[in-house]
Length: 294
Image (tube, rainbow, N blue to C red; front, side):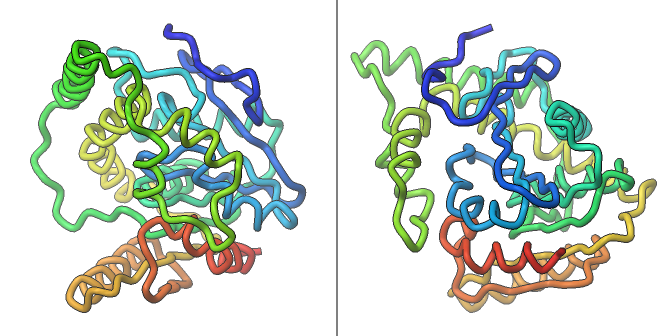
């Protein structure tokens, strides 16, 4: 397994789950909350939101394989929905969390928290979906192994090209600051430090491409799970980042309402003029919504 870089000054701890060494942060005091990041997000992208939650929650988050400081993904790693749910359970067990937790998922991670709730209703105290990924019409699936193989081939080719032209390090901080909006107080020193080290580097890009390649298969599994496992009777909240583009805003809000119906949500909150990375751009409002779940 490829060694994990830059761990000497890392916050949090490392937990071995299966074939992966996962970077886990466990902060705050109060009822447990498991916070799952979006596709292409590392732990530090959640810092603005976590800083507003730790006074009233015990917030647990971890980098999925290949992200942040968790071990890189190898060619044998084929992400699955139920595999990630099992990782969520094992991280909670490793941290000694036995009581039900509120699970919060941003974007693609909405699949994980929904599946967790359906598979483990006895361990679920509430569900919050932040601008979640809901597929209206599933597309035809290319075999997962082929899609994941393409991700490895693409990054392998990029590595070879950049090595040949003498580019020792891929762009990181500048790209990250363009992709992820700054929180109201600006980016902290720790965020900038880790963003410069990790964002956009080959291991990160590979993890993002591999997880994206698995999205269709994971969504298919979730649709099957919806038919067999009802949502638990706990508070379910859907938060919508509403665009400034009129046509897209109407479609997105309608789509998120459909998602809320599927989840049996008892609350849907629309944040006007919000970007998709609302965990960074609008952390005060998102934290208030999560606090209301209590």
